[in-house]
Image 1: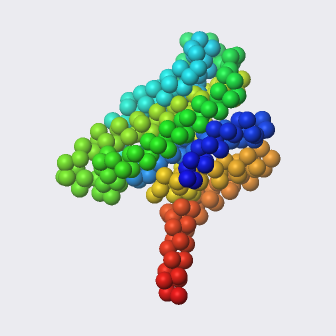
Image 2: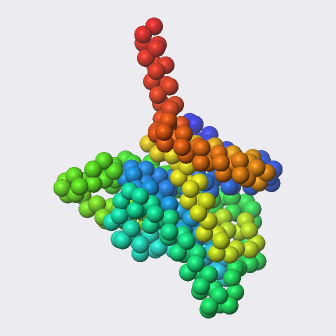
Length: 301
């Protein structure tokens, strides 16, 4: 019932909301795609990926390159393919690393992509940056991102209930033991990493038309850190957790980022510290604990 109501609200939003609120809803939906897709891989495996900025930036820049020559939503599909392709290329190497080494490698991926693109643009095309001269209608853009969010959430639900999802949990619990049980851990990790990257690339491609000009700075490391904080804040133990975190942080960024940029960035750091130290299960886990205590109190009464 609740899910149906949320779906109807999302579909009806363009007709009911003002342009400003519709733009805010669009940004929050994109955050939902990033947080949910990040949790697809990093949630159960406990591999801290900071590559979101690389996949997001690749999708966005691809739209800037081909957007005017391909009908919508072809750039979005291509953005997802590019994100997955990058993940497949680096996954075999990156996923042999663990802990802080994997996090550092994935963080460097966005910087590598940015500087490689700068070198290519200045050395080959003779320019840096692209103009987006043709853009889809605002309603078309909104429903595209809404569809991505719905697909990401559906994928997360189905994955958690599948044998593949159980394999990911086993990898996060004890990877060596999972291998002895016959799980092809490398194949599972690479495939899920690529699936997560596909959603991130598609989200970047879909959101690119919001800007009229893009340059390699679109490979922004802040996107990677925001995604991690959104997912951890909501809690990666449930599908709803990253959604809650994305909505909460999306609203906070809208209120603080433009007018109080440094307060917002300081708040991000403090939020991450609080979540890691005091709320390892996120807001969703806190809510579950509160419900459990209330039920125990009722039983005791």
